[in-house]
Image (cartoon, rainbow, N blue to C red):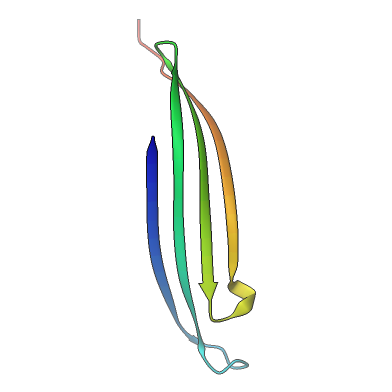
Length: 78
């Protein structure tokens, strides 16, 4: 089991001439993944993550879910 969480505050320097203020985003990312060993050389991993971007400019605010299914195989030198 693997879990992660991250928070980023983006303050942009550019002041939009139409809006009259700079964009500010608060971005929260978090996720979890589960792995199952398959045989002695394989690993199957399933993950889910979410990004929540809250912005003071509505066009840049969004929520996004991502799902992953990965298979890892370790090659051995003979």
